[in-house]
Image 1: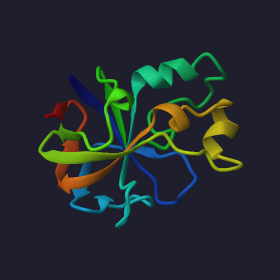
Image 2: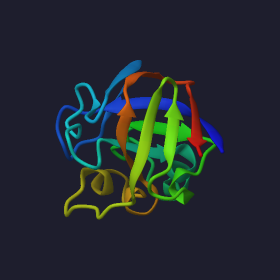
Image 3: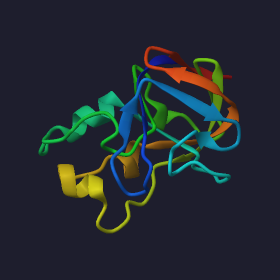
Image 4: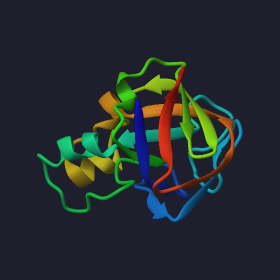
Length: 145
């Protein structure tokens, strides 16, 4: 199963939509340098496919852009949420390991307020960083065996 990175997104504060950056630096067992959600825990990096974002476009679309669902990596062409926890992903030169699929959306979520619904609880994927490095839009995303 193969896909690609569409965008890299980070935020300096939790609970807010992320901004798209040109290049991300993934730090082993931490997450993206400069991202408020990075740290030594099981949700170091979040991923969401443009296919999931398209589903949300059935609702209001004002402000709907990469990072609005608080995902670090926006992907295309790979249904990450169908992969089992423990699956390793090659993302450019980096390796991530899926640690959680979906999450409970907190009360008053900025994303829900902005677009009316959040797909992260069902289709958002979270991972830990096994091997760090640089990530760019256009990098391949491959599920490893």
